[in-house]
Length: 209
Image (cartoon, rainbow, N blue to C red):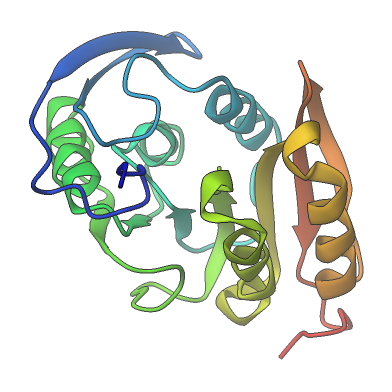
């Protein structure tokens, strides 16, 4: 059976690569390997999500969660952009997490916490000012929707969820789910079919705690 990037790919043969990317004037270097998502370059969806995240700062104090962090580009860029905040980065892929640790060190980002978690199962810093996710579409709609439904339990009041998803891979369905869970949703970016959706946890949102 073919391995997917959201599996534990620890035993897969290595094929390490490195690339550089410049974002908001800062150059980052990322090491990747076989068995991780978007190993040749920064995924376009992640780039669109980062642009939207930097353009809409969180409105409350507190940590940020990079949910499904892969080898770390989203969390590491956010750690540079938000140096006063802790950026927690979680994934189910141990090889990707090993790379995320190396990439955080290579980019001299110390305000990060990187560890294994299936969804929100073992997150440490909850509740968050913001949750960012480029969800693992190939893991299925159920997983993507679990990232949405779990968010309200892990956000501070006023905190928000930013999710990037292609229209053809279920953006309208995700938008509907976010509206149902939070009572609000807006599309804050649209590029080449990629939507960035934002929902805010309000005290009166349907599932607010």
